[in-house]
Each structure stands twice: as structure tokens, then as C-alpha cells.
Image (cartoon, rainbow over all chains, first blue to last red; front, side):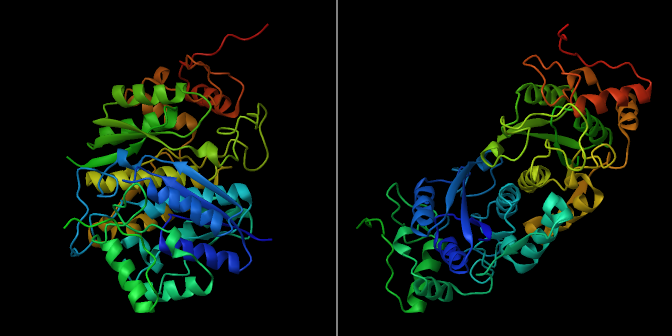
Length: 226
Length: 226
């Protein structure tokens, strides 16, 4: 059975990617990061998603990106915006996908896996430079220069199966594969129970995705103030 | 004053790179990793090197690479070899330089720095795929696709000034720049006081470097059993 490392954040996209990789017959090794993100609900969701999604194993790597700051997701001094922003949003974490893919590459090499799956998406997150096809291709090229396997063997493949899909298409595909999106947390400022704010960019895109797919939104929202 | 992020391990090579970057007029931000390496002497040396070497700031990022294993440097179950190995040595840490450069890239973006310095060397560490010029070039290319600055601005430069130098040449250059190599720790299995074993590959290459440079070796060695 071919092995794959699958980056699992606890969100909707990576839950779908995990289901797609399992459906393709990979033995999936789920990888998450405790990177100083604002809430632990995301990591708890990652654990549920990995378990329910059929991952062979789930590892959480501690990596304190808040030590370098620069993002609303890791720096408590920067507020999460509740209206859409122009250009690259403050929720962008500098070099995050590069860092995550690098560690995934190291684990893939140790496991003797050749495939790394990541749920990046160029449609909804067009403001994030590290969600574009050119980035994924450049990382794959790097991976095959950086490692034993890349240099001596048959090489790594970085798979980003959502990259050209809309949120509605992602959700439709996941529902077909049996993904339970109630287990996932997308919100940038979820509460301790994983309930969503309903106001941040991530919540907005998610809600639009369910509406666009014509599928009832299973998201649990925080009680709203009057 | 131009800013640079400089990867500082506490070893001889990165101490030299820091001196070179400072000599070129960069304001240097030193970055080290607590990545599950076997001994803390290396990190203490990194702190000394950054301070003595004139870094503006020194940050240590915790990142538990021992969670993925696969190397004698992070996995206590794999012995550090004391005779030269064929091919890629067991002290190779999967994707380590890729991970370190990725975090350096994130910090550089936050600092508004454009240069990242790394002390990789293709001559003495020819067994490590992530120490070759093609790797450094591929990372620079990736950096300029992965980030705001790369996409919108004038781009990042990854500088590896030691890449084609022998150990003796590195030491001569460092001594010219006033590097105090007694502050550095190279050994893969240094003791708590930072004293070297004198037997591992890293010790051997370092001792040969001082001999080749015709410079007295300031390394402190562990007392040897009779």
C-alpha cells in the first residue's frame, strides 16, 4: 500500500483532501502543527478529522511560529478582520505552507512515502501567495533536490487536489466521499468548543460554499449577542 | 541598514557566515532551532556566537523534529557513527535545511529583510543533498513564489557564501574576520560543557580544517578514557 503524508489542519479543505487520498488507496499519515495559532479547537478538530477520516497515524508537531509574529493568526496584537480585505490579508502567516510542507517532506522521507497532500486552494484564497499552483510546483522541485529520495530515487509528488476547485465544489466532492463536515473547524476565532464566529473571512467563505453547493451547513456557531 | 536573517547553529560554519554578513554591513538577525538535537551545548554555543558575533537579535524556535525521527542527531535509538560512512550519513536530518530556511523566510518577511544567510557547504558535506548549490537556488526560487515580498516586491536572496569553500578556507576567512572559534561547538555528541568527542565525522572534519589552515585548533575536547 502506497503511503502518503497528508497535512490536516482541522478545517474543511484538508478533511476533504484526506478523504480523497484515502479513496485513492493511500495509507495516510496525518500531520498537524501546534504553531501558536489562536485556539486549540483547530487541533482538536484535526485529531477528530484524522481519526474519523481513516488516517493510519496522526502526529502533531510543535513549532512556535508566534515567535516570528507577523500574522493575525499567531500574534494576539493583530486583530482578525471581519470585513474582506484588499490584497494579502493579515491572516496570512508568513511562509506557513512552506514550513508545513518542509516538515511533511521530512516525515515522508522517514516513512518512505512518496506523496504529500496539501489542501491549498487558489480560488478562494487568491490573496495567499503560497496557495497557487506555481508555489506547489516549486516546492515539489525543491523536494526532489533537498532529499535522499529525490536525488537517488523516484522522487516526491506534492498533490494539491483542491487547488482549482471552488469551495462549493470541494464540499460536494467531500460529501460524496462521506466527509462529516460537522467535525471540522474553519473559523479563525473559534471558541473553546470549536464553535464558529460567523463573521471572519474563513466563516464567510465556508458558509458561501455550503450555500453554493446546496448542502445544509452543519457548522456550529457561537451564540450571538443581541 | 539592510537586514539579514542568519541561521546560526553554534557551529564553526554558521559563526563564519555571521561574521561575513556583519562585515558586509547587514544588520543580522540570528535564528536557531531547538529541534530535538541530542545536546543543548549546541544551542548555548549559538547564543554565544550570536552575541559575540554582533547579531542585533537572536531567536530560538522550538520545533520538535525528533517527532519524525530518522536521524542519529534527533533519534536516540540511532548511534552517531565514529567511522566515515558511504553515501548519505545517518546524521542527515530529513529536510532539515528546508525546514530551517522556511522559518527563516517567514521571519525575513516579518522583519522586511531580503537576505537569508546559511552556512551550508558542498565540499565537506557532499553526502547531504540539502547542502548543494542546486538546493539553495531551488529554495530561493520557491521563496520568491511563496511570499508577499517575492510576488509583489524585489524578492529574497538566499546567500550561502561557504558553499564552495573547504573547511580550511572557511577557517582562514573566519580568523581574518576575528571569529573566536573557541565559542563554537561542532561535535555531534558534545558533553554538557560543550566539549567535543574528537571521534565523530564532524569532529574529524573540523580538526582536519584547522590542520589544513595551519591554525591552532581551539576546540575543547572531552577527557579521553585510558
